[in-house]
Length: 89
Image 1 (cartoon, rainbow, N blue to C red):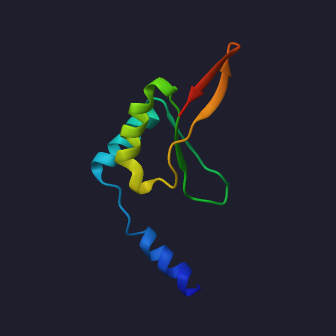
Image 2: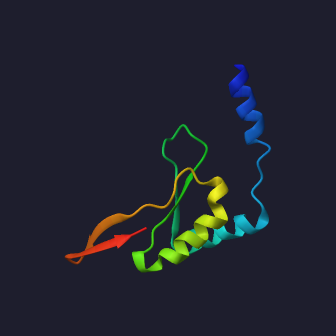
């Protein structure tokens, strides 16, 4: 095992999600969030959350709680529902 990989392996086993953040993640998955595994050979999953733009405050609230574990900021997405243009975060 190379040196840098070994250090990453050791550090990844030391990370424990605190109880409050873990309960937020569970709440998201039980409500309107989802988990996806980007590649079958990986062990980590991504947490996804999508809300309409009028609920941006909620998305930023959740992001502030989980920001330590996020790799990017929330971003605006365009969609179409029943022929109507919609925006979400």
